[in-house]
Amino acid sequence: MKIIQYQKIIESVSDMCIRAACDLPPDVWDGIKEARQKEPFPRAQIIIDQILENASIAQKERMPICQDTGSAVFFVKMGGDIRIDGGTLNDAISEGTRIGYTKGNLRCSIVGDPIFDRKNTGDNTPASIHVDIVDGDTLEIVLLPKGGGCENMSRLVMLKPSDGLQGVKKFVTESVISAGGNPCPPIIVGVGVGGTADGAGVLSKKALLRPAGVHHKDERYASLESDLLKEINAGGIGPQGLGGMSTALWVSVEYQPCHIASLPVAVSINCHAARRSTVIL
Image (tube, rainbow, N blue to C red):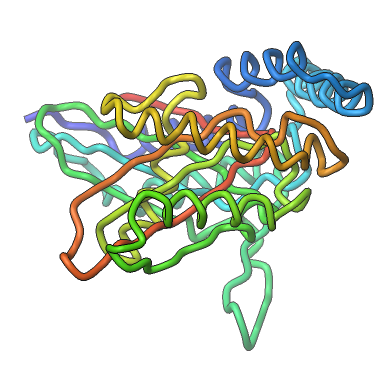
C-alpha cells in the first residue's frame, strides 16, 4: 500500500493551476503552427500569428494565456493500492485549487448559486472532479481549465440508434458550425458517443485530454475524427470566426457502450488556449 500525503496533493494541484494558465501544451503549439502553415487567408494568418505571440508572452512572463482562467475540471486515475494520509482526495484537490488560483492571481469565475444568488465564491471552487479507480499505486491528476466561452458551446443530443454514423456526423458538425466564433477558434473538439446522457458529457471532455494529432486506436473512429475535422474546417469559420480554413485544430472521439434504445452524443470544445496540466504522484 502506497501512502500519499494530503499536503502533497494540495501543493501539486496548486502548481498545476498556475502552470496550466500560463503554458500551452506542446501538442497544441504544434497544432497551431501547422494550421498557420496551411492557412491560405491573410487575415486568418495574422490572427494565428497573434495567438502564437500571445502564448509565447504568457509562457515567458508567467501570465495567463487568457483572462478567463476557466472552471477547474479534474480527471483523476487513482490506483487501488493508494491511501491518502491526512484527508480526502476531493478536499485536497479543492484546497489546491483555492490556493493555486489565489496565489497565481488567476481570475476566479465560479458563482455559488447558479440562479438565485450568483455571488462569486472568490477562489474558483468548488472544482469539478471525476475519479476513476484503476490498478496500481499511482495517482494521476489531470487539470482541464474550461473557459466560459467554449464551455457554453457544449451540446448534447439523444439520437435514435437508426440515426447512425451520419446522424452523429451531422450533429457534431452543425454544433460546431453554429457556435461560430464564440468558442474562440481555432478550436479542439471533443466528442463523446454512447453511455448515458451524463456519461456522454464527461466522455466528451475526456476526449479533450488526448493530445492533438493522436488518432483513436480504433480505425473506424480514427476515420470519423478525420471526416469531422475536414467537414468542420470546410465551414469557413476560421480563426476567431473571421473566416479561414483553420476552424478546428483537431477532433477527438471517445465512445462507450450504451442502451439498445439510445445513441447519446455530446460535444465539448476547447478554445485555441487548450490548456491542461498533469501530475503523477
